Length: 258
Image 1: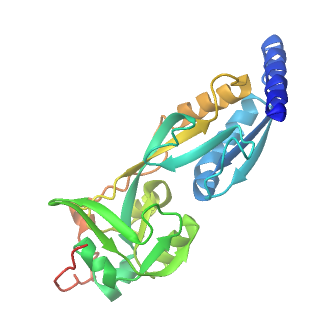
Image 2 (image 1 turned 120 degrees about the vertical axis):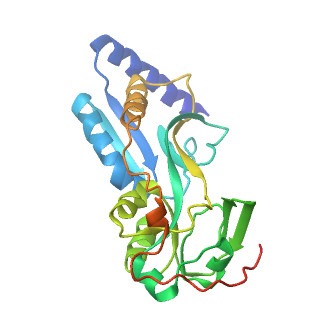
């Protein structure tokens, strides 16, 4: 407790110095998911440093959900349906979850038409997915879920994407990762009438009480940056929802209800 009080005093002193000089300074410790951090946050860090060169950024990329307070971070980027209620959050944008596969895989294995068929497909799973092996969707007749049997499981979304692009199976990944692949046709959205939902992308921090100017400036820049679309939505058109040329539809079968 005494250490936290001392840190708060230091932050207040730095804030006073920054206010007097008119220039933000000091260190910010930040954490963010790996794929999102590499693909979409690097330009933000560059812009922030251009504007505030006296601020040092200490970045930790991990898909593990870090404890912002106990692990000493000033700010975390969270991608979730709801941010932690114990933290202050600012919503930056959202990303849609998409079920997709490469045309080469669909040519070999057929195109699933109902989530129940995923139980018999090769699936590439993300280890930190909240539902685990159970994938849930909102369909025309209401919610439906299926227990998948992953052939590959990994704690990194880029690995899921890379293996899927090699024609190895079906993935459920966010548009910030696969939107460009869907737009180019390298991946095909499956069953667009069954929606896996969207995840909010948030900046989270511990308290408004001791919000250093440098942190407020960074949060404002993040909100400004993601106020503009930064990746294709990948929404399927009727043509994209059909199998690619030469890709046979999977024969109809009875689907097991979850």
